[in-house]
Length: 94
Image 1 (cartoon, rainbow, N blue to C red):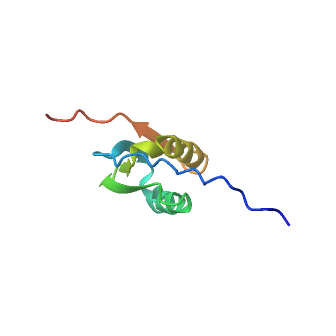
Image 2: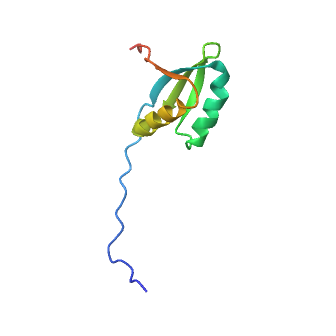
Image 3: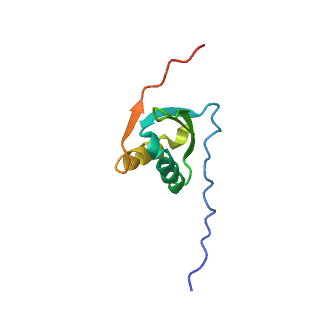
């Protein structure tokens, strides 16, 4: 029987809560919006999206900044299933 470790478990450092969410605009075929929602839910709800223009298939994906790498991996994987284009973000007003 193995003896329990005498070392204390290391505390995980949680990043501070971000003040703003990251935003990525996407263009997909309007008929693929439901499939995109299904794929996003399959990736443990990395973020939430809003349909900006349902006729052109433009979506706004919001996610936490510390998940940016995982979101990029998700978008790369989703692009194998549906035609997906990442759009440049519009300029923000001050």
